[in-house]
Image 1: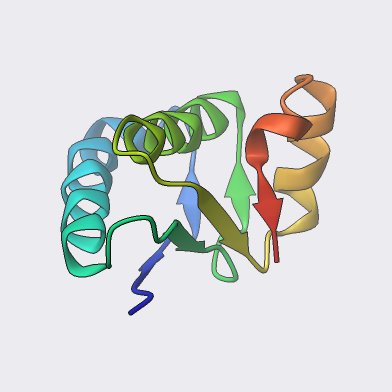
Image 2: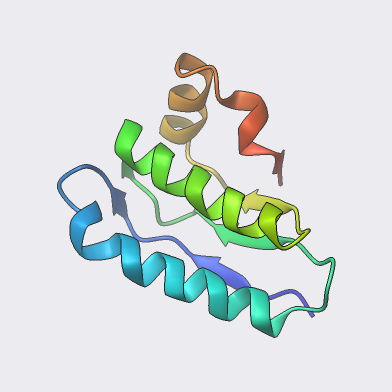
Length: 98
């Protein structure tokens, strides 16, 4: 079973203080719902605004998945996220993009 974690419309320095703990908890729940070895799947179609703090938060979720021996996928990443990842030399860390 693949469960997905829908991302909010904004992941920025301004929004992360109130969102980060919730995102971590949701990611943990998704990982518990999926079979061992299945990736953490992030649904990014709603994400409209992202900055380097948001990218760092996403990479924290990646580390969480990797620590459990999981991969991760980003579904429908917006151009802003892809551009930011390229500018931050984190494009390869974004992982498999679907």
